[in-house]
Amino acid sequence: MLNFNFNFNFNFIFLFLFLFILPLALCWADGDHYKNALIGGRAATMGGAYVAISDDASGSYYNPGGLAYASGSSISGSANTYYISKAKYKNTIGNRDWDRENINLLPNFFGIVQKFEKFSFGLSYVVPDSFIEHQDQYYRDITETSTAINIYTLNIHSEDNTYQMGPSFAYEFAPSFSLGLTLHYHYRVLRKAQSQLVKYSASSDESSYLNTLKKEKGIKSKLGLIWSPIQKLSLGFTAAKTIILTALNDSQQNSKVTGSSSNSFDVSSDIRKRQLPYEFSLGAALFTTPYFLISSDFSYYLKPDETKEHTWNAALGSEIFLGESNALRFGLYTNRTNNKDVSSSTLAPHDHIDYYGGTLGWSLYSKATTITFGGSYSYGSGKAQVYSGSTVSRDFNRYTMNFILAVDYGL
Image 1 (cartoon, rainbow, N blue to C red):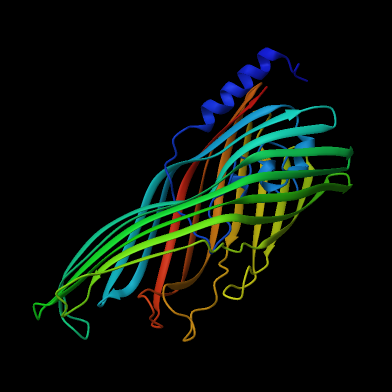
Image 2: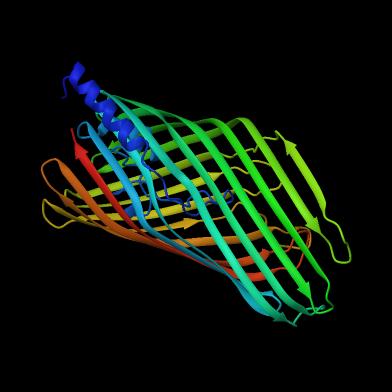
């Protein structure tokens, strides 16, 4: 165990602050799904099936109860080193497809665990949901509509980022039972600028510019426990809730409609707060031998309001040690939406799509350091109502792929 003296404290805090302010490059965010990012190295390459394990720094995110069984004090960091997401909305611009692409880098987790005899303390910084998108699209001679369009341009810059940071605590009541708590400060900021221009063949045109800013601050608490009823079997349970304390929603719109010689300008602002769901997760891990384990998770999300639906996610992961210094991991997971099915009673912008994914990873162990390489891929297809206020739906699909790099260092 580490001696908690002045020099250790100074170095510990300095390293934490240095890594904490690393600049972020952002990726895909989506408030209608709850598993847009897999956190950590070992956990991510097992498809996120980690609720019944969670014995490293990423346990602060998956199940704080698992921190009590950490092998020692450690520092962990992970990054989705290369991330690509592509979506295709079919027959959306006339009879042409609308393609959207997002390619980024993302450091999304940093955590520290300080291990005492039966008590563990952790600090973590997590980016569970993040997005940046640039769209500069130009179409000519769109004749497959009720009104022929000579030129259509669309320019979008959008960033939507959620950050969570704070302490975790865990206590080992017995070799077979532990309890933990994570308290994260929740901060989300969305910025979006969108402009479009439509020139019709009849020498008329319309245009619009929309600027949106949304901010919210709150607290996310997660209670977790680990229980081993028999040797080689571990069970985990978590309950979590994010409460939004303050919110700001500002928008400005400048638009010109067909046949008008002047623009209209609208401003709106409110402090309405989003409702986020109660989250419950169950996990099981079977340590069949010292060299092989299999784990599974099931998560359920209560609908936050009547505009959404209850939904669930599942994950299955496996770890195989190929000797003392190499481990191979596999995972399968879902990322299901809480949106209602697209129908005549839903209005754009609205979509319904469920994603299914897989992961693969490899870890190299040394005396004090673990380096993990891996990747994940997910795909989904569904229906989308694209144009504002419209009930007309289009088929669309999206795939995401990212490469994972993680480092753990034992203190």
